[in-house]
Image (cartoon, rainbow, N blue to C red):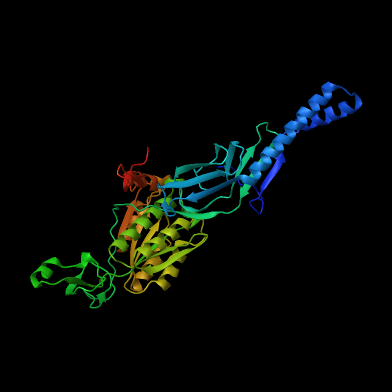
Length: 435
């Protein structure tokens, strides 16, 4: 991955530059010598060198007009550990070949290098794919990029810049199993909500006649067979309350760096807990007070999970908001009967009074402590965990590596790719990542 230049041309037009200055000096010397000392030798050398210049320029000029390139991202949604794949295409409309074409990419995705050299014959197209495993979550850009070529003599150089860029967000993965249970909360104060749900929940209350558009998985087959007509289950709304996931993003309490740091561990936990809540048809929200706060209000469904994953992908650990302030702010958004999961690597106890005030407002609180000693700190989080439990709050202490890293989790899951079978059928195949 080449370093991105400070300025780029504002258009995709090709630029032709003289690559070697020595032949120019030789041409000037021969020209002067031919005038001062007329001789057939100097004239022959002058014509030969001048012919090289003409052929070289015409060659590069043809490539500047007729050599074009394009790139296309194959999958727009990727997570850490997924395979990022692009298809590149070089088209040479000219009647002369491009003996070598260098692809220069200014993409800023960590670990993704697409700098290659290709050859494109006359009136031909060259296609290939570039792949890489996503190593870091965040927002990145594909492009700008450029193609560079030259004449066979190396006298002139043609560079065509492609200034368009494509934004790509690399999301955190979802951990399959976590040793952290979801809190129940209390949405109504009763064992069951009498209102019917438009989505499937774990509570099936009654059955009704099948209507066009009802999912087939809702059909209650025993009753349908008994009554000789299709019936579907009606679902109660879940009696459990909403869930807020609060990440401590204060810069001063973070430990480690990269995938082994506390913020990446916290993001992995938050993504996995949010996915589990969505699977259980729970309303879930996210609050992270980094340098750029990421707040996603509670909601249900797969779309809510994508919104939370996007927010987690953009979350940073460079915030100045303390956990105490974050809890106070969250207390104004969380409704009575909801539950809050606090994920923090903090070793101080100054935020515990605010946690108690949340309970007094009717908001259940659960704490996930990232064990500081396991992340390289001299102090341990066991004492703070004991204090949290003595106040009556459920508390889980997670050590570094206990739930793995994003790359390790994706390593276990592998990735999906599409292949064409011998019969011409396109099938999805799950392939493990190379170790």
